[in-house]
Length: 142
Image (cartoon, rainbow, N blue to C red; front, top):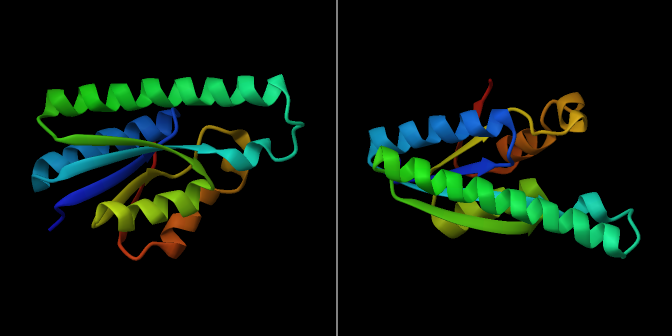
């Protein structure tokens, strides 16, 4: 039985589907849902620290805010208590760390993110979370 569920979103169609599945699981289990959006700061490591970096970070931050607001609204519509988090860092590590921080018993995430690189790597974030999580992980495919 799950009392707390963590779902990771990134604005992709796959993560939207993962959110829908997580909302349904939370509704069925009468669990609270914790939604995390991670700004992957490793993407910027090879870029010079200038306006380009700031613009890209700002775009991802705005995308994250919109995605988290949408998750909150969907939760209200389903009668699910939703708590949102925006973090930065390595996505896999951050998601695993949030399971411990929130006390989640289940992690839900998409099989791959929105980048073509993620598709080639067969969902490096989802693979990392499956390998390192101490709790159950549900990987959702489109």
